[in-house]
Amino acid sequence: MDISRLSAAQLDRLHALPLFHGLDEETVRSLLQCPEVTCTAFSRDTTIWQRACPVTKLGLLLTGTLRIEQCDFWGNRTILRLLPQGNLFGEAYALDSAPLENDVVAHSEATVVFLPVSLLLEDASPLPGKAGTAIYRNLLRIAAERCRFLTAKLSAMSQRSTRDKLMAYLSHEACMQLSSVITLPFSRTQLADYLAVERTGLYRAIRSLEEEGYIRAVPEGFALLQSPENPA
Amino acid sequence: MDISRLSAAQLDRLHALPLFHGLDEETVRSLLQCPEVTCTAFSRDTTIWQRACPVTKLGLLLTGTLRIEQCDFWGNRTILRLLPQGNLFGEAYALDSAPLENDVVAHSEATVVFLPVSLLLEDASPLPGKAGTAIYRNLLRIAAERCRFLTAKLSAMSQRSTRDKLMAYLSHEACMQLSSVITLPFSRTQLADYLAVERTGLYRAIRSLEEEGYIRAVPEGFALLQSPENPA
DNA sequence: TCTCATGTGTTGAAAATGCAACAGACTTTT
DNA sequence: AAAAGTCTGTTGCATTTTCAACACATGAGA
Image (cartoon, rainbow over all chains, first blue to last red; front, top):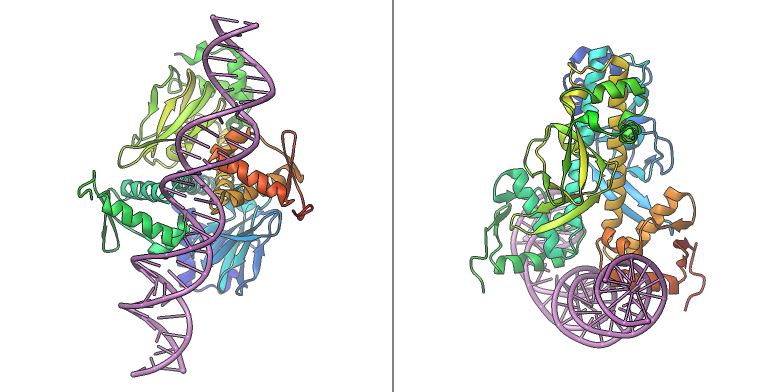
């Protein structure tokens, strides 16, 4: 699919991505019109990239959802995460010329814009100096944010029990949302998947924390209580 | 402590860091001699950075070990990880002006060189054009590698059982080491901490995988077997 | 309206995990 | 050479987690 066939709304959405922050519209447009920039539509369950393949392009997921999968040594497949619309993917591999460690599959119909890293980073980049620096800075921001997110998740997941994972997660969310009353971005079922615990076990943990007065369920989320209030 | 009081060996070690890859010695030396670059010695258990403080410098751990800690909403402290000599730290926060989410403490006596990000990234950076680009590229590489590492660890930790965490870890190591016979970088006790599982549970998992013929213990590591060889 | 699918919340029983305690091998210190 | 410390590997037992099976509410579609 040709990049020029994208709708104006799609181009606007592309331009609004954090990757292009600080770049003027004209620069982005001319970048996207380079012949090396491609746009492909994938139908459901099509493999976009496979493990071990060298990644030289950044992927910009314009529409649809992708699935990051992994097969282990013995052939067992796991779904690592779903990538919603608007996300950048592959940057951790493309920026470091590292072989891909998992498979990227279209989870629904999806449209992806591929941007060769050489266009952005090489000395041959067509970007004028200022714009090149802005892209670098944006990429660094994106990578830094990803690291912080992964570290936070890892610190919750390092807890031994479901109960402690939940507490770590809530605690972190309270910091992020700057409030001791927090709104969950997930359903409870999704929260269980996110924390990689059994849904039913999560319910049990919620109940016991409530009974001990550490948290209180509120619509859409939880309130964190400073110390046990109504000990049984 | 003045940067100029560092020994030649220490300067060499600094220069060899991935952050300065591709930069000539002269550039690195002049960068380090900027008055904004500082070097501090910390004694054991001193807090270097505290949660929520704005981080504007990269830390280069020249000697010693640091400890990354976290306190949750209810005051429980956890050690997230230890940072060995030679590591860069704080970059995920400094590069994105994000407030720190945990505490950094000297685990042993430690020497740290602080490099304000403004020296590296701002338009006012004293680095000549080429060198500035090289630093950007190095920072991106470092961040990308960190992301890949964290993602890999997260994918092992997302497994529900100790057994599956171990299999995921071994499977990944086999890929990295390009061999089905892998060398562990840890003792088994450390491996248990790394995977955030009980040491004794890990032993049980190892035994059962061995009995079922999936793996075989070899000196310093494990051999992965394609399929059950000696089913009980 | 009825059905089908999906999310919520609960439970009992089986299996896995975490904990505490132990014995042996090996090092370092005294 | 004895003592103290650390790392390995094992086990029993209490607790937690998972699994499978429920009942119930809600929303979409026929």
